[in-house]
Image 1 (spheres, rainbow, N blue to C red):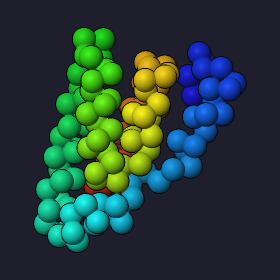
Image 2 (image 1 turned 45 degrees about the vertical axis):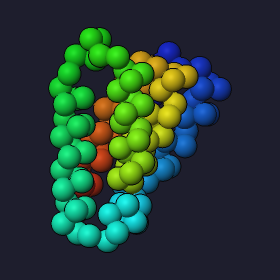
Image 3 (image 1 turned 30 degrees about the horizontal axis):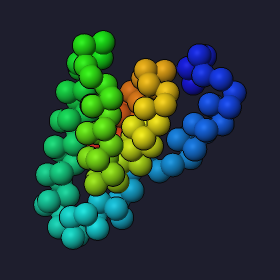
Image 4 (image 1 turned 120 degrees about the vertical axis):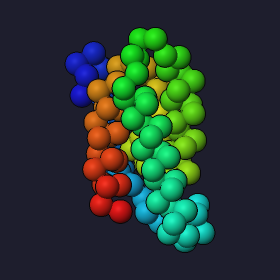
Length: 113
């Protein structure tokens, strides 16, 4: 965790590591169990993550980016990413490291799907 976070803030963020990286049941519900659609949605989401990861975060409107990413993450079942996006408004850039870790974790799990 980022050293700039205070103890109370760390407690608030502690749920991030206990939340599922990828909730396949949520994805199945969102896609009405259509496996082809699931693969397409995962690929699109990974593309979105790759663009975000490859961008210069100092030049982005991160509040907007995290808001858009939160909706996509909720729809696909990327639970850790959704949770970090939800907390972005309060903690902002101090969550950059946690977000990048969550993106890597999601991509690793999604690659097995």
